[in-house]
Structure formats: C-alpha cells, structure tokens
Amino acid sequence: MNNGIVLKKSVRIALWISLLFAFIISVGFTDSRQANMKCSELMISVNDSTGQSFVEARDIRQIILDKFGEIEGQTLSNINISLLEKIIDNNPFVADAEVFSSVNGKLNIEVTQRKPVVRVFNIKQESFYIDDQGEFMPLSEKYTARVPVANGFIPEQESDINLLIKKEFNSPDTTGKKSAISRVYAIADFLNRNDFWNAQIEQIYINASGEIELIPRVGLHTIIIGNTEGLQEKFDRLYTFYNDGLNKTGWNKYSTINLKFKDQVVCTKK
Image (cartoon, rainbow, N blue to C red):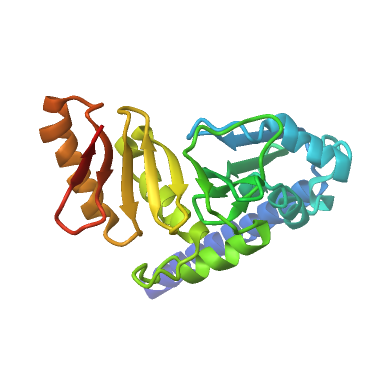
C-alpha cells in the first residue's frame, strides 16, 4: 500500500519535472527566435482624438528613416528602442511615444500629439502656442489649430513661458503681480475644460492694466474678467446672464459685460 503511494508521488514529481524542463526549453527557443527575428513591418499609430494634424504617420516614418535608415529587415534585437522613443519624443509636436515589438516581428510605434489650448501674439508680434500642460509649443507649417487667440499687453517670450507658468499657475491672482502669460494660460486652461465656453470664446485680450478681456463668437460685446480668481463663479454668472438676460433683451444690446465684481454683472449699453 505504502509502496503504491510512493510510486504515485514519484510519477507526479517526474511529470512536473518534465513539464518544467519542456517549459524552459520552449522559453529558450522562443527567446532565441525573438533575438534573431527581423522586423517584418513598421506599424505607426498617431493618436488624433482631438482632431489635430500636427504629426502624421509619414512624419514619424521620415524621422526614423533619417536616423536609423530602413527599419524593415533589421534584426529586432539590434534596434535601440529607448533611443528611438527619445528621438520621436524630441519632435516639438509629440507629447509621448511608445515603441515595442510584437511576437510576429512587427515594430509598433504609438504616438500621442501635444494639444495646444491657445495661440499667443505677444507685444513683439511673436506668435506661438501654449499646450494643455502649460508649455511653449511652436507653430506648425502644415497645420493651424482652432484655439482661442490671445494678444494685447503680453511681454513674455518663448524663453519665459515654461518657468513662469509652472511657478505661478497655482498662486493667487489677487496682488496684480501674476504675469500676463500665466493669466492667459489660466483662462485658456479653463476654457479647454469646458466645451461650451471653449466654443464661445474666440479671443483673450490683456489690456494695459493687465486685466483680462474676452471676445465671444456670438454677441457684439466685450466680457471683462479682471483677474483669474474665481473663474468658475464668474463664468457661472455669465452663463446665467446669457440665459436670463441676453436671450430676452438681445445679444447686441450691451458693449461690455463686467464680471470683475463679486456677485455682480455690470453692463454698459451701446
């Protein structure tokens, strides 16, 4: 009886050892096959969920061709994937790139584009975008984004943007010391998070006093915001005024709608 039990245990142990050995051989064979596998195809996917066309698959393919030559036919293990990702990430219109190979020999590249939220014209008439991360983004020769335009008394240049916005974004805007470019981004970021206001506001203007004025697409009036404190409350007031006021009196009755003062909407008739 005991001999039978011992025999069964021995068989099970032998079976498990055999399976483990087979698995190790299989993995080793697969690794060897993968190491020698050549790239059969380059698959490039560009995330275009926002309708931007700053970067296309052919642009990424050209970047790779310029730096690495023809990828198809190269041994996958010889392709420096980390370097490839860094080179694609260096494109000024790319937010992120992921490169990975698949078991069938395809090299996959997934690219996410940067998303501009405002186009700026500073006092020197230099023009550039600010993206949704609050960072400088150059203009493109092939595509113009449909985003609000900011102009007026904006002295900041390209080299100032990233540092100022990161430093000032979460600071209160009550002292009058916040830079014009930080105020522009704060407004643009708010608009970008609200489909209705992003569609309604087409221009952000910084006046000589550093205050924010907005030009809507619908209605011949100027919206005076002042600073960037309490933006949600200010726009809630404006939305209520649009619904309860302008829908009844007409959209072109007032030249200015002033939201600077707490709990008030002060209008100037034409």
